[in-house]
Amino acid sequence: MGKCIVVTGAGSGLGRALARRLAADGHTIILIGRTPARLDAVAAELGEPSRVVVCDVGSADSVQAAFNTIGERHPGIDVLINNAAIYEPFFVKDATDTQIASAVSTNLTGPIYCTRAAIPMMKRGGHIINVSSETVVLPHAMFSLYQSSKAGLERFTEALDAELKPDGIRVTMVRAGQMMDADSKPAANASVARRFAEENLKRGLDLRARPISSFNSVADVFSTLVNLPADVNVPSMTLEARHP
Image 1 (cartoon, rainbow, N blue to C red):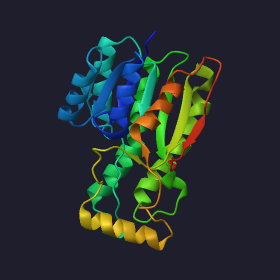
Image 2: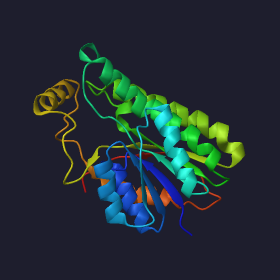
Image 3: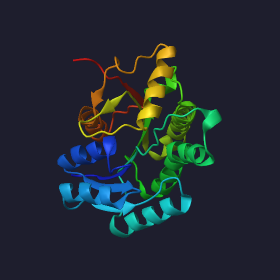
């Protein structure tokens, strides 16, 4: 029997790949994101019973409204995948107020808001999956906000697992490696991307030489997580890209 799965950041990248893979497994996908056109394109590809709910996960009001909308059509949520994130390189000394607020609100506060809204809609056997990043443990330059917000998400995941264990709701942290697809676009303009590469090379990270996995390959792993047997739990998982 298919599950009702909410995927944040579902309009592109890993979120889109997750929606495609999990819909192919027979699950009902609720596509959450800020850009209606992208979400609509994915929904059109997936067909019924997938549904679009426009939402800014960094806004508490937007999240609550989105989950109220979901609840009007679906009696419950089986899986929440907190995937939405802002991946933008910059130095803190150069950061604007908007860059700082957006990184923290989308990467950390957003998953907390979505989790709070989803918990009352989950029964025993529900599953919350938070997507973190390998940058938490790598010496990346220009990623202070991205790394720290993802590190906060990992600690939140650990605490949430302990909190929800008595309710029978599983919580998993997935620390993902570098990934992209053929239509992936750079997260920064050319000059910023060039400086990002140069600054990381100074720290021993040659971004051009590091392996990159496919969003689709990572989505295949999530398919296994979503379909875990009732007597199995995966509190955390690390996915590394590798050269085949």
